[in-house]
Amino acid sequence: MAGALNGVRIFDLTRILAGPSCTQVLGDLGADVIKIEQPGRGDDTRQWGPPYVTGADGNETTESAYFLSANRNKRSVAIDIAKPEGQALAKRLIARCDILVENFKTGDLARYGLSWDGLKAEIPGLVYCSITGFGQTGPYAAHAGYDYLAQAMGGIMSLTGEVDGEPMKVGVGIADLMCGMYAATAMLAALRHRDATGKGQQIDMSLLDTQVAWLVYEAENYLISGRTPPRRGNGHPNIVPYQVFEIADGHMVLACGNDRQFREFCDMAAAPHLYEDSRFATNDGRCRNREALIPLVAELMRLKTMDAWLEGLRARHVPCSPVNTVDQVFADPQVRARGMQIEMPHPLAAAGTIPLVASPIRMSETPPGYRHAPPMLGQHTEEVLGELLDMGAAEIAALREAGIV
Image 1 (cartoon, rainbow, N blue to C red):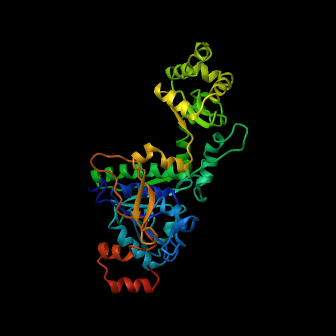
Image 2: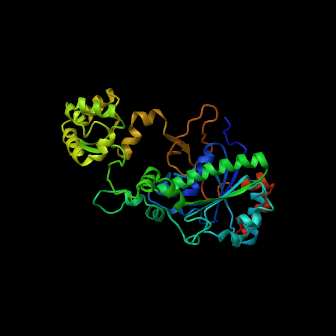
Image 3: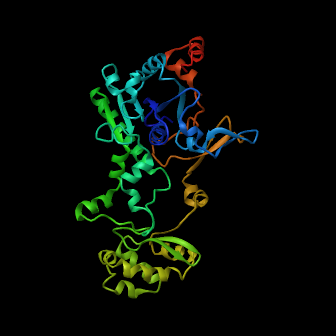
């Protein structure tokens, strides 16, 4: 079945996580993603291990798990864009593409004649997306940016971690991933505009901008109140009780999102006096009196086991959850039922396949597809150059001999 983006071709000059995660989403939806990599080196994350894929001989290969996580449904073409011949080759391929997405430092691609200003007149319908740490303008535009810096500068680390602990980053590169998601949305909107008008455009995405945007309600809490939000550990700024609690045999999340759910929790815990207390009868009151309420809830939570709480609270439609480790996530019956782990063929894997995390997108008519496993470096160079530029084997061999591909 053809994907929703079948016929859309992307010239992908990204590496690490923000750009690759973005183009993987588009590739899953059917776009032909041509990943351009430096010959002999490739995406930096190919070396970001261990772990690596285990080969047939039982030894580790050069394919890292990090790289595999964000590079499915792409074709790898090795081109040295630092050389004039490589730049000329890149321009010929870009002319056959709908989108160019890159995450070089601001201004770097101008040295290679591959900037927006260098391409827009020649390819007026091109959608050109730049992903950088700080954007194309502003006093930090020339600075290198990484996920960790964006999390720190963008405020999320000030909100994450124990109340009296040090600022804490999120466990994965969430600033990169969210920037990639925003970028994918922007590119789809730009394609719709291009299809309606024939005009391409430049998209300027910044890790810092998107990090500020996804502060969401905590940012708005500050803008409305003028008060800097504190770090609350596992607590929520606007809902109480809505956090992790210790129980008789571990930890779990209790998430009472409304007053009915809080009453149901109290009834199950044999503590109706809590919701009968005027301080705790409404969410507004519970937020204002959280320091009095949370120790009382915590004392109740320690009295029952995980199984008892899950059975009782779920029967009353009170949101609750175990705190799963990653192995428990992939063993969870809901995760398994939704098919969130897939297997794809890989030529270096001892088992012949590699496990990957599935796309979370569900579409009734054009669901995501899995056409290409994360590619080996330059795996599709001959295929793409022959298909798009009608190059023969001898011409490609000459380019390879000259170190262009």
